[in-house]
Amino acid sequence: MRSYLRNVERWFVAFLVVNLVMGTSSVLIPLKIDRILEEGPSRLGILATFASAAAVLGSLLWGRLSDAVHRRKTFVVLSCLMVAVTHAGLALSRSFAVLVLHNTLLSFFWVANASVAVLLVIEWKDERGWESGISLLNFFGAIGWLLGLVAGAVGVSAAFSTLAEAVGMRTLFLSLSALAFVSAVLAGWLIPSVVPRFTQRKFRGVRVAVGNLLVEVWRFNPLHLYHRASFRRLGRLRPETRGFLIASALAFTGIGFFAVPLALLLSQRMSYSPSLVFFSYVVLHSGIVLAYPIALHRIRRRGNRRVQIAALAVRAALLAVGAGVLWRVDEVPWLAAAPFLFVIGLTWSFFQLSGVAFASRLAKPENRGLTLGIYNAIAGGSSVVAGISSGYLAQNVGHEMTYLCSASLLLCAIIVLVRLPDPAPGAVGLVEDELEGGA
Image 1 (cartoon, rainbow, N blue to C red):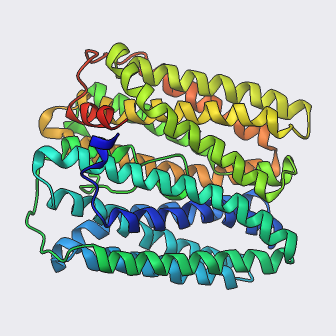
Image 2: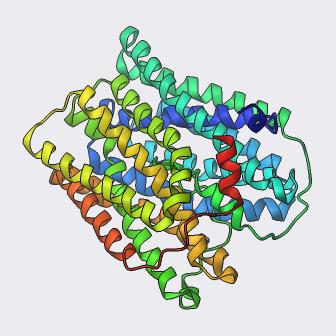
C-alpha cells in the first residue's frame, strides 16, 4: 500500500473532500424528501431521472469544453464552487420543485469535477502511469464517499437529537456547503495550472479504470463519456458486442430498480432512523470497496463473462428473496438487512469491473472507443429509465414489485450473456495489474 500511495498528487485531497460532501448528500437528499417534504418514492424517482439526465449531458460536455478553453483547473474549481452553491440551495429549498432544480444543477456541475479530474491525471503522467494514477483517484474518491456516509450517520444523529428536524437538516446542508467551499479553495491552491497538451489518445485502459468509479449511487454515474455515444454506428459493431450492450442495458436498468427507491424503502417502509439509513449505505458501500481486489483475482481465474453472470445471478436471487420477505412482513430488523446490503455491494464490484473489461475485450480494436462510449451512456441512460419507473412502481404497487422487476431484468440480462462468447480468462489488461498492486 505504501508503494501504491507514493504517487499521490496533493490535489487528490480536494477530490476526497468534495466526495465526502457528495457521499453525505446522496442520502441526505432522499431523507429530506421523506421527512421534511413528506413525499414518496415516485417523487424520488423523478428527482433521480432529472439528475441522471443532467449527469449524462454534463459528462458529454465538460471534457470537450475544457479542451476548447485550454483549462482544466478552472473547471474543477468551478465544479466545487457549484457543489457549495447548490448545497446552500438544497438547504433553503422549501418545495419539491426547487429541490429538483438545485439537485439537477448539482449533478450537472458535479460531473465536471469527475471528468476533468481524470484528464488532469492523464496529462500529468506518462502514458504508462495513467491507470495507476486513475486508480489512486478512484481510491480517494471511494474513501471520501465512505467517510461522507459515516459523517452523515453521525451528523443526523447529533443534529436531530438537539434541533428540530427541519432546522437540523438545513444545518447539515449548510455545513456541507461550507465544506464544498473548502474543497474549492484546496483545488485552487493545490492543482497546478497547466495548458492541456493533448487532443486525443487511445483511451482503452483509461476507460477501464474510470469505469470502476461508477458505483451504485444514482447520482454518481456516469462520470465520463470519452466520446459521444453514436448509436447510429451500432451496425459497425460485432453481433456479440451488440448482444453485450443489450445485456448491459437490462442489467443497469434492473440495478436502478433496486437502487433508486432504496433510501425511502429504508426510511418509510422499514421505519429506520436517519442515522440507520446512513449506516445502511455505509454497509453497502463497504461491500463495494472490499470486494474490488477479490473481483480482480476472480476475473483472472474465471474470465469476465462467468464473473458477470455469477454476480448478476447472486443479486437476482437476493432480490427475489427480498421481494418475498417484503411481501410477508412490513419491517425487517436492521441487523437482518445489513448482511443483505453488504452482499448486494459485493455483487456490484464484480459486475462493474467485469462489465467494463468485457466490453473492451468483445469489441474490435478500432471500435473500442465507440463500445465504451455506448456502454457508459447505457449506464447513465438506464438510471433515467429506472428512476421514473421504479419510483412510480414503489409508490403505487409496492417495493416488493420493484424488487421483482429488478430480479426479472437481471435474469433477462443473464439469458443474453450466456449466449455470448467468453474471452479467454487471464490478462484483462494493464489496468488490472495496476489496480491489483494497489489493493
